[in-house]
Length: 86
Image (cartoon, rainbow, N blue to C red; front, side, top):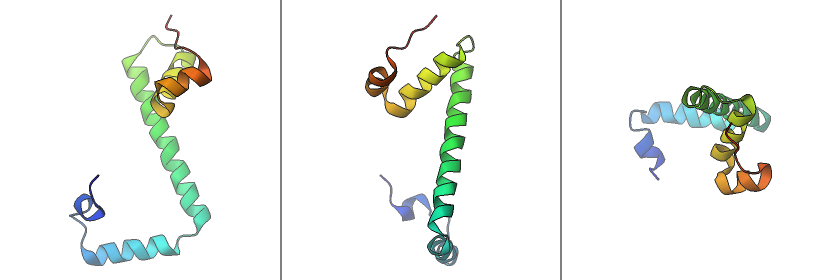
């Protein structure tokens, strides 16, 4: 995994200091809210991609395929059963 510095080589130390200050001052409830928003966005993007790759799939099949992506195939099968493609 790359380090923070490797992933943010275009961020100046001054901007980095401001960013870290803002994160320290952000209340925990807001950080949770931001993470929830990011997770919802990621799921929507994944669902859009699945819809494009499987245009004839039912909404149930798309949800099941999303479970494979989120949980991994093995756990998704244990939780939801095998993926049935019609």
